[in-house]
Image (cartoon, rainbow, N blue to C red):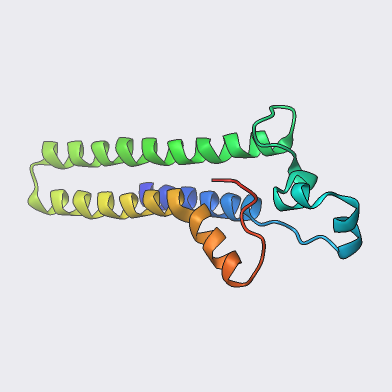
Length: 134
């Protein structure tokens, strides 16, 4: 059950980060109307990520919340698994807890580096990138 929850958290985090990291391409006439600086910074879509009145600020806050929640889940679930394994005093359960913790750690690292990975892939295809979200 916990393994499924961890996978769902990872998949949900990856989808959210991918959706909000992708910048929609604007047509040429829309780019001409909006200044090139605003187009480069994605301000024409979501606004400024430092201003609480714009959606970009709240998207960045949500992405940060997902990152911190991933760390808390990693720590909490891993501690619970190791505690159960120690109480059961079974070497096999300790090995399983270690394996689960390693998988969770890898998921957590992927969640943290997903915006960088998305930005790299988008730049390979000559798209604009992650609009400053990190």
